[in-house]
Image (cartoon, rainbow, N blue to C red; front, top):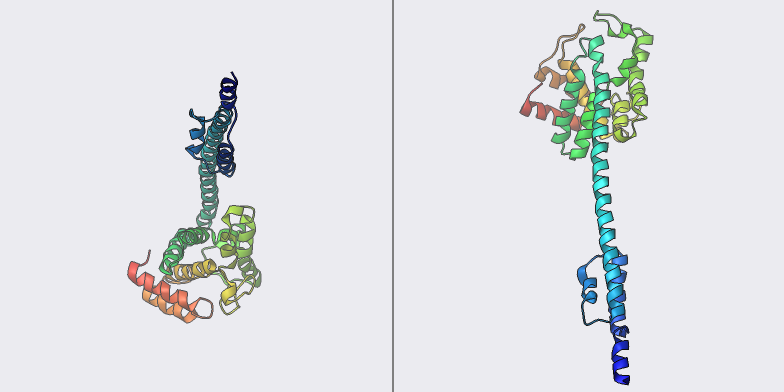
Length: 275
């Protein structure tokens, strides 16, 4: 009778070795390292207590994994929705920026060309894809501050700018940055818009910063902006070809424009042509 009682009791009594191994696996599960090792303890040959604990932990692990999988799905869905929202917001702002073309025939298409030239130059100097995309957006939006210009600034007549008009022109980068400042995900685009008229020698506007203080994206957009202005027909100037434009760009090299970027841009234009 005593032997039978001991056998019956041992069915529910865990050995020290079983407990040690089980605790080790449970600790791994608690640390997020899931494995099927726990299921080994649910099989015959282990004490009933160990089997019940292993089954409970196994079920808990399955439920946690299911919840984590669902969370990952929700996070991915949120990422997709966020990306779509960003795209729609950017497109809306770009549409507003493009409205400048309706007020000034000479500005029509300018933002798109600057964006493409900026993208090409950014790739030429081997920036990352993320930087290239950000600079392209900056190129599209660089003149959005001109939305605040008075109608006299959009006349097609060859007029001489007054001091007030020049002051208004020099404010458009700052106005543009202010328009965009609440769209936080634009990140460095705001700096590119604000500083695309700065000069490497410190004589630019609106902040008079120089050389390394100017963000790379703003320097790139500045070169692209200048080139498109030189090569576009205006009421007050004839559009230049790429050879003439290259000479003018080089005359600004190291003064208003980055010498390194000017040479890279000229080479890029020779390789891939003008728009």
